[in-house]
Image (cartoon, rainbow, N blue to C red; front, side):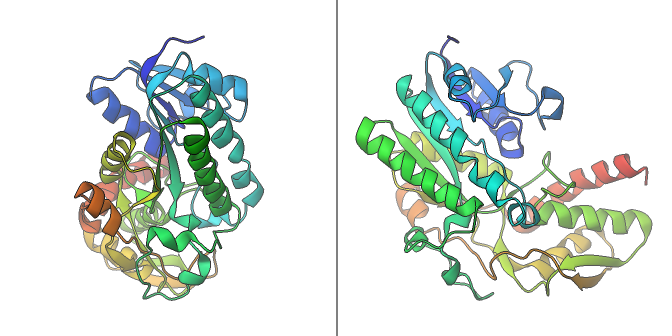
Length: 327
């Protein structure tokens, strides 16, 4: 059995996981980082951590990951991506119930201090997201349930699992509903990327080639809020260490249309663009985060502006595009 550590991060090879590990290390924590991907496919590898390539769909691997215990276990392990991925891979997304459940079992058996579960705004009822000018979603709006098919239902089910492990076994579970987390050192191409990274990639190509026309899925009037990675990591640790047991929104309340997201990045890049609207996966018509509860309980909400966050993200994606395509 592996020795106890301060923190275990499941899904550490992913975008959020890599940033979270870096933040925990900066606090001086000992960290065990686990992901199904080979190490050379992790977005960030921190040599001072114990890095394990393990499939956490298997309970035995979860027991190894948790080891003799930890003060904090962060479960970010799941199959996910942008709308193009989750709309076309519902079964794969639902299979994330295996690491979700097995990590809970292993953490409970090892009597860990706190167990964090990364849920999603995709748990919210679709019938409350049919207009672009959306009322911000309150935590209570997840019920009566009508979650995003596949991905959202697995997240909602696993939220319930966390609740029942807390109620029945005393495992201290904490849950955040992430709203469109973005930033540097993440997925930016290949089909799993989310709107902010895809936007940055397309604008970078336009800037490097001089091609003004940029494709965008749908009419571009669908609305979203986007949360910068630094706010996400801060909020994740805050919720994990706090006393609130119910799921809380962890998202920016700065609403924008997808059209305006493209124009914002084009302005950051210093170029003019022409949007070409094409068919593609769109998701709900509008989604925004109501931050009343996180403000009430913690006196805090994500505050990094979309322009500031996208400027940092664009700079990083631009370098990736230039290097990969020799532009």
